[in-house]
Image 1 (tube, rainbow, N blue to C red):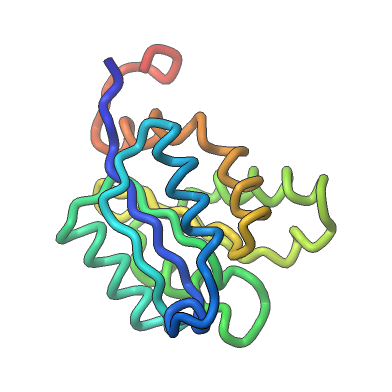
Image 2: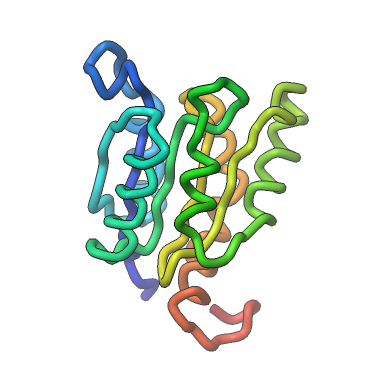
Length: 166
């Protein structure tokens, strides 16, 4: 039986954090991840603030011990889009293949995919993945990598089975 991994969904939205906009992306990601067998142990909407994002990522990875953190929002080119910088500040090792795969698949749908600055990486035993803020784009992006996530987490946590056997 496969281990159930813990997951946190962190939405970056100034308006959402003030209650001025519904978080359709974060809510949808919670459903997707539950259906994929992940246990949702954290969910929060915070403003587009690099220090708050970094502090939350550190807390969730270090104190709460989450296996996976999925962020949604703040990955574009607007001045307030600082999620990639906050993520880069807290990760120990980058995992560029995840972001590259998502951008490549998204580019088949929209040329705007080249504007994504999403980062993915590892902090301790936690995998952190940045997704776009729109419900549609976040759903499309997570679908690209979802099947690889349990194995990635298994290996991050020290799993020793060969890649073809885990």
